[in-house]
Image (cartoon, rainbow, N blue to C red):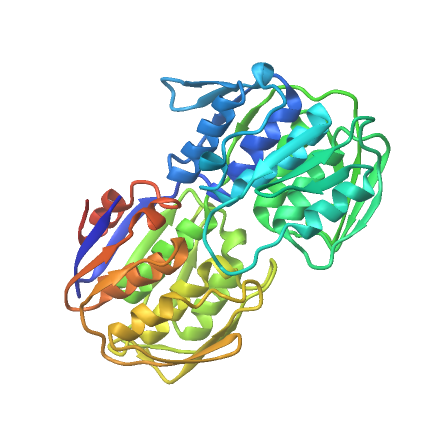
Length: 419
């Protein structure tokens, strides 16, 4: 995906089916290393981050087979201790989950620079602190980190400085094969953390307290291969729901878990957007105008940081939004790079520290550059709602998280072409 061309200003309506969660798939795929056996994954999204993860696993010795059913079989029995090339691991942030998995399985893990979206400093110090408390030795090399536990890992009390999703997941993976009990305090409670815990428990792990701020893991000697269905992608669902709000709707997203979307749906209700939920679907319809409000991101169940750019884009739309709004980003300090591109369309946004204050204005179609995955999605929403033809370059960033993007938007009536 190199660029996206949008002829905007058209009403979007209809329904689409959401795919599997990228944020759940990555820790589960890498976490499967601790089974040492074959696992079969259904609803695995074919997005670039997931395909890159499979490429990393293949390099380490896993055998990958795409089944006629659409499922993917990963045989981990051939995985051996080693370090995947930095050219692979630096492409996705999720490669950090290799640390917990390789350390637990082989007593040694080495990782080059982990990539993904650049939101400024995204240290893994909480991961490393947890591994050290479990008895591992950490060495920071010139271009990589090396973690060794030749005598194995042991249970420990690990107080996280913040409810980090990555640290919680990595430490759960490592603790699943550690000796004794590990308690992760101030743990993250996001749905994809619960999905990882469910996968590990199906494989034989003993994990309790998931969804609370204290997760307990009692290590076992052996885990086993299982079948796993990846949970629906709440961020993909939220993005298409935002598209429905930006362009009128009604837009219905199917194969979702509405409970995962509660923070977004509550926000829509405060904005005056009509929301209807079913057992596994959500429908939104925006009236001619909706209200801007104040939104603050935070760990689940607060408003998700991965939907912050999209909601900000909605507030910029002068032909739809009323009043003034703000988005305060409390998770990633440098997540406002997309704002400059929205300003090029005519958006009126001022940033003070971690808060973007937004006054709706009439936007103009422009040639834009996607700065990152969710920022690119925000630009796409603005382009869809703005009269004229917009072009978004560096679109590979958007392809990292949205499967069949062109087909799904076309199904809603969008005039969009992906090159």
